[in-house]
Image 1 (cartoon, rainbow, N blue to C red):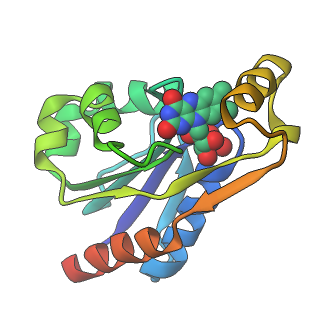
Image 2: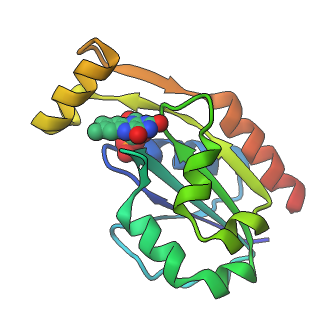
Length: 159
Ligand SMILES: Cc1cc2nc3c(=O)[nH]c(=O)nc-3n(C[C@H](O)[C@H](O)[C@H](O)COP(=O)(O)O)c2cc1C
């Protein structure tokens, strides 16, 4: 089964996690940054994986646009969603609040891959907010590789 991974990222963490996921799935899945190409041709793919980071409770705009305009096409595929975010208690709420309900109900896999704060990539306001929130200006990396591996295993079971 052919797999495509579509992602939206602000500072590169979701891109990094998408590449890690692609390596773990194997077989060279196609990787598309939805900010660079918001109209990927889904027709040749059976498995569509959508990844986004969360900023101020929201998925990336290009991911939202893509999901909203492709509901019908996505319902014909096996769809999985993963998020990169720092929320640990209830990250599922971001999926429920940001993606069309029909898609959320149809998912074969959901993953929460953790996140990073990379201060040198942030704008001034972002840096100010995150520094206050996390009470440090040191970079933080909390990527959950075990969750990426688990997600990849679920994808491989479909193949
Ligand atoms: C300005 C800002 C706001 C954020 N807001 C949230 C949030 O509301 N919830 C959350 O869980 N993580 C939040 N995060 C953490 C990001 O999801 C995390 O930094 C992620 O790794 C960013 O990935 P990206 O570089 O692919 O965009 C925020 C990060 C920044 C910089």
